[in-house]
Length: 170
Image 1 (cartoon, one colour):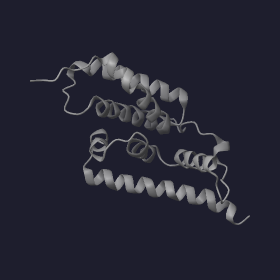
Image 2: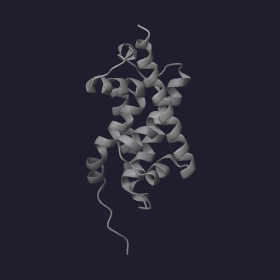
Image 3: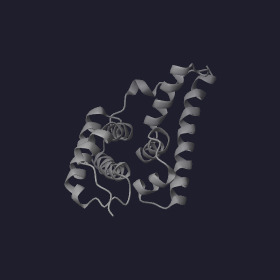
Image 4: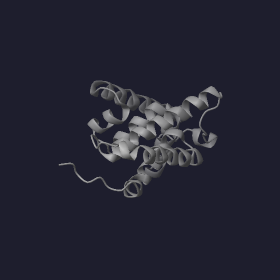
């Protein structure tokens, strides 16, 4: 007996904030993130009748969102531009950081790593998807997902160390 599928409007209302947040973190632009979230739900709406429920609707939508973000990043690179970054955000953080400075340093470091690294860190740590759900979204093996997560964490740690280190000599 097949479980009743919720309406797409209900799914959109439930998942809009997390999809928008994900897109914003990957592309680092509110305007582009809004467009990508709309694109995600438009594509989801068009395919809703074919959604089989083999994964959760949230995982399914994240998969659509990550594909939209990938296409956006590739197109941006082809135009030899990058997603918008704030040059002021590149300023290094002091060696001993207060809590709000730590958050600011973390967000700067996230902006400075690759979109692929931002995506996996966002899905796993900020959106709270399980390893299995991240595997479904990324369409890779579990081992590959853990390896990518490891490398993303290392890239983030490296950026944070560079930020802190720039003031240690001053």
